[in-house]
Image 1 (cartoon, rainbow, N blue to C red):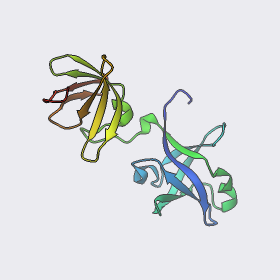
Image 2 (cartoon, rainbow, N blue to C red):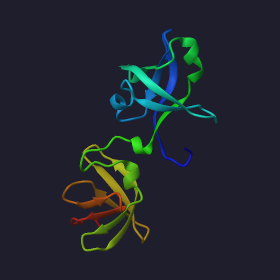
Image 3 (spheres, helix red, strand yellow):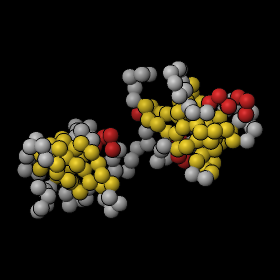
Length: 173
């Protein structure tokens, strides 16, 4: 398990009520998928220790958190010890994104080249501006190139090959 990449889903911050429910601070864009009945998650202790697999029985959103009910836990005494534990899933369980949307970790590190084939550098960070993201490319000369994530600029994004082809609009370089 240690070699497989894990994704944070949330952190158990408290118990809720006396029937074994847990309050979770979510760290996912897809809480409705992660906390739906039947979902299986890995629960990791805050220090070192073995994770346990849990199954969601029910969940509901409450004040920017989620209250979850876990199969096999029916009272507060059984769940009290799980405060501070992390909820995770494996990387291969991540939610597929629609065409043209990417996970940050899939873009950072990709090599960027112009449509003419000139190597520009690699994506070192992503900046969210609200309107669109900006990919920050570290060039071989040490300078940064800011690539707006818009259709006019992006020609091809091949996550599997870790390559991005861009059209350099006037003023970008």
